[in-house]
Structure formats: C-alpha cells, structure tokens
Image (cartoon, rainbow, N blue to C red; front, side, top):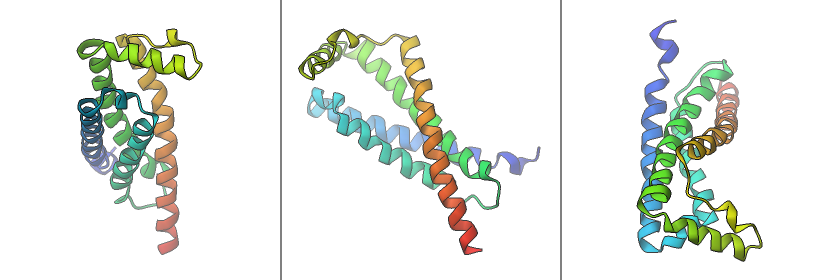
Length: 156
C-alpha cells in the first residue's frame, strides 16, 4: 500500500468535520429559535443536502476507473459528519434537554403513533441509530461517486 492509496482520507475527514459542524450549527440555531424545530422532519431531511455537498466536494478530485476510489472519500465524509451529529444529538436529548423527549412524544401522539417510542436516548441506542444511518450514507456516497465517475469517463 502506497501513500497514494489513502490520499483521499484527509479530504474525507476535512469535509466530514465541516459538514458535521454545519449540521450541528443548524440544529443549535433551530433549538434556540424554537425548540420544536429540532424535531422537524424538514430540518432532518434538509441536512442531507449539507452531507451531499460535502461528500461531492470530497469526491470531486478523484480520478481513475476504480469505483471504490470514488466512493471512499464521500463515505468517510458521511461517517465523520454523522458521528459529530449523533454525538450532539445524544448530548442534546439525554443531557442538556431531556424535555425534548416529551415534545417528541406529543408530536408522535398527534400523528397517531405510539408516544412511548419517544425515549431518552442511551449511548447504545444512539450508536445503533448512527450505525443504521451509515447504510444511507453509503448509498449516497455510491450514487455521487458513480455519477462523478461516469462524468469523468465521458470527458476522457
């Protein structure tokens, strides 16, 4: 293994930190403007755009034919960014403001769902949710990476 083999790592980590800080910042702003917005589906889905942009920026400089080379920096970006987010999520819901769980229970009840699903997250449940989110991150990284690879091949 040469140093070129892992040349994508710094970009993945850098863009992951940038995306993670932006997403956490968005949630902090939402929290201080109106606590309920932290539970907003729109905010949660909107952060996907931040992840996608950061993943694209990490994957954009990649050249070559190997599909893995296109996927790895984007996936690492997602892994780092989402780790920062889920650390924040756990601290917010379990430590700083456990009352958010009551808001979540009320929202679930209003939507006709079981309010008992809203529970203070444990470290284990937060990690499990984070691990599950990595599947989505891989799919995003693969889609962006394969799109960039196809674009690169069409230019050659």
